[in-house]
Amino acid sequence: MKLTSFKDASKPICYFNSLVQIEIPDSFSIKEIRGVWVANVLNIDLPTIEDLNLYFLKFREMLDTCVEFNINTIYFQVRTTNDAFYESNLNPYSRYFTGKEGKRPPIDVFRCILNEAKKKNIAIHAWCNPYRVSPDGKQSIEDYLKTCDSMNFAKLHPEYLVKDTSGKLILNPAREEVKQFIVDSMAELANRYEIDGIHFDDYFYPYSGLSEDLNDLADFEKRIDKNQSLGDFRRMHVSDVIKRVHEMLKRDYPKLRFGVSPFGIWKNQSSDPLGSNTAKACSESFSGQFADTYLWVKEKYIDYIVPQIYWEFGHPIAPFADICDWWVKLCEKSLVDLYIGHGSYRLGQTGEYENPDEVVNQLKYANQYDAVKGNIFFSYKSLLNENKEKPGIDKIKNLLSR
Image (cartoon, rainbow, N blue to C red; front, side, top):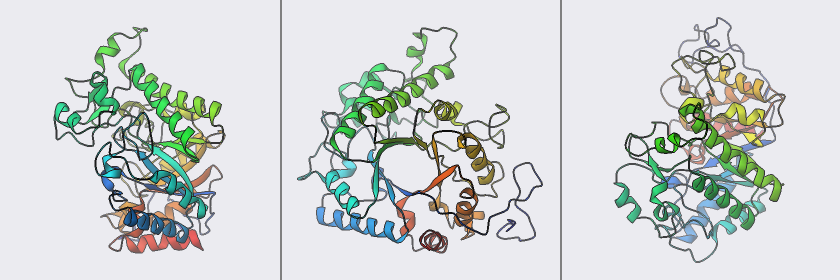
């Protein structure tokens, strides 16, 4: 099927800067990994456990929904804001888990979650945000840290904090103490629980950039290689954490898989001939979050990668097909598995996502490639929506479960 605009069938949808019309295969190839992200920050997908009976009812409903959609992997967020959704000697229980940071539940709820998922043959990857400390910048550093438990690494070491231009706090990626803390936290998690993998999201250096008054410039001035640019300095430290976590897991927990779900664009061709066929105006993870995902794939610092390709086929500067093709080319001869991240939450939004077939078409298009090993949806809540997203969600369900 040659793709046309949802509202104007006479208008072809083409590859970026091209007259070549995108073609959607009629057939669909089901892939090994069918996953969904469960976002726990701000209780997006699950409530707190203050009512344990309600919590486990919601979680069992989640597992049943996954079975209905033929989903076999959950990327369950267990570190949201420098905290834990599991028993830890390094990190306090999350306020989004127990209702108050540091409050201990009566039982090991995460272990119960893993046991329930195992009954349904659903794998659990522990989704971790390595750096984020606060979800917003509404409070001063002092006021926010007062709300944190005494175990919180940021409260113990406020000297390791930097903030973005909106006041959100993150751990300073350039500090060795921060990097070791992240590695140690991942090792503890892998040691305590029979998880199937560890998963990092796209939040490395903040999207908005660091503030002028609390940043990593003092660390940059102390760099050993004075010829190193600020961008290279930041990328070096982010890549170092990725590499060290992977090496630790391969050494001590070789059965566990380690993956990352980065922003979907590494670089544009205008920045680098190796970049994707996307417009110069598009943001780039390489220079925005200082995440060199190309390097991580080429050097196999990870076991799998899930680019967040949340743009539609008809997007004016970052079309789905062009970005998908770039990742396929990067991964097709690599030992790093490629899963595509789909923005199912966008179904029903103004534009091409008004088309109930938008994500179904993405699935058919992406899965025609052998290099694509799976599909992951953001987020679980979108699978339940009974509003404008429902027609598109029902089509996804029918496609995956037929």
